[in-house]
Length: 428
Image 1 (cartoon, rainbow, N blue to C red):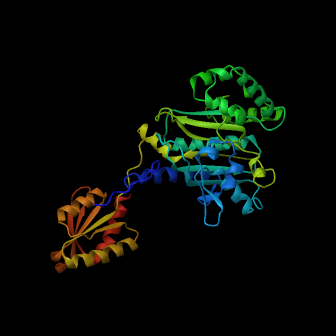
Image 2 (cartoon, one colour):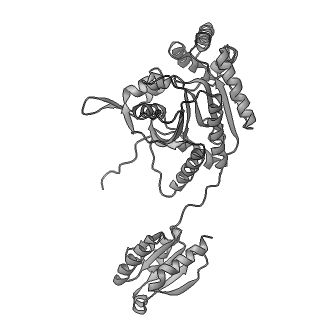
């Protein structure tokens, strides 16, 4: 026997027994996001590597450590999509989507690829739900985005949720750049007590030191300068309005001055949503403003914001919280044949039923009636139609209700209308 080939480490199969959970969450997302005016966008699974180097940031962990990059047969450097924002901005510019609509609001549900250490709710190929709102500088857009995600997780009945928010300032000299210099000076004063990662980030990406998970480092930075004390007048005004809108919407939040997110392009508002269930891997969404990214990728200065949510982790959180999913969908009718002529008849009848909008599965294997009934039960069939030699001779079919066990004989010519009537009753 040949050696069995298994899935690549960090990837997994979503089998039919669990994929209904994904359909449920994705359907809920589409309904909520479209109510808020967001439209679906689909971008290629791979892009020019330059897009992520320029967009995500050359010194980010994603670009330096986690991307799946390869050279195609034409010698071009391509990268499997590690995150969704730069591709959406690229599409927005390339397709001139800004021409007719001043504010474009997109959502996407797509696979992302990152070479990370696999752990609870984190895979090297994972499905991400993301949204991008491009064109509005208003603090109300920030509140709208966070309220939309809050509404979404409320619809899913996820509990023990916390929304954390921060403002990371802007590029004005008296704002974030000024704070970064204070932060670097403070870090250098404590350099001997910092972990190797923070020492590395000190010059490359100093803001990332703030979310270091090493206890000694986090204690040091708790006593250091806070970015909220160094915001310029405009950033302070923006933050004040965002907070007032969130309070008006009665959405609970807490300020976290150490929240900076891991991507270079964020400006002003950043936020993260966490929920209990998966221990340390508790983040179920994160995002914020990126007012400079459109310009960095070749467009005119355009304000924008968005967030991403890993569906793998979101669903794992729901499972850990014992959130009730809808029952997996079953089929309406399972058709069982006994004998050669029976196969021909159930093939014909199943085709008729399917054209009427009735879901039907047929037993084509040469198995016993008992074995086929077990399969029907496993598939969640509401009814079973049995056609054997005796039924064919009489021009009838045996119809069994799998809920109550009632069995009756139905004229074969009337099966279509009979099933329509019965399923109409059962669907009430």
